[in-house]
Length: 249
Image 1 (cartoon, rainbow, N blue to C red):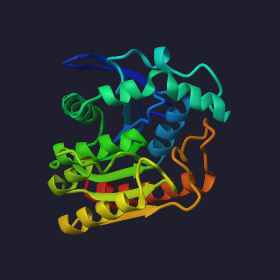
Image 2 (image 1 turned 30 degrees about the horizontal axis):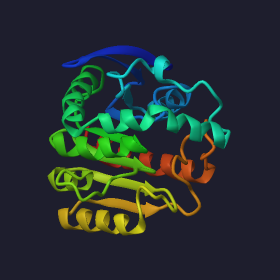
Image 3 (image 1 turned 90 degrees about the horizontal axis):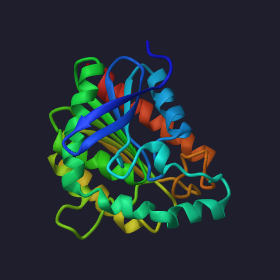
């Protein structure tokens, strides 16, 4: 059992990405939030690994720099610091990670996870912008991904022809989607669109807004931390993985 988080290097067509790796057992691909790889992400990776899974969390912004290069230098538990961090180029990185780039990367992440995890299906879990990547990966790798967790995701429903929610139709996964309350990036109307897509595709799912939980509610190192929202995310994700990934392995 790999008790602590290791940092490994993954070769991609566009360079080398660092990634956190922990645990043993069936695989879980963990998509970070826009703040990046940091101690809070390592804690979350360790938690999922403690449930009996091999967890891989890549630095999806590797084209822009290492995790250390991009990490915040101030305490994001102070609202003003969090706001300033997001005004410092973060969204340029988010928008620069186009679906084409993300698809190429996902192939490398899934292949690397297969090298370390037990044989069988995998799950993927994403936070904030990582939820979009989790949905897309389930569509791109429908032969492997059987579970998708998405927490306080934004931009899951757009008017674009490649909107993340359209990936649901191509997937074979079950979903646990817990959305932030009063999130400008994912409105109740968007949640209804997700619900319709999940029902139409026949995908088993939880698709709910967490009352009182703001965008970023799982991140205890920021001002948007919400303990009850984070607890619910862990409970739903563990149940989903145990049901859809472990039982099928």
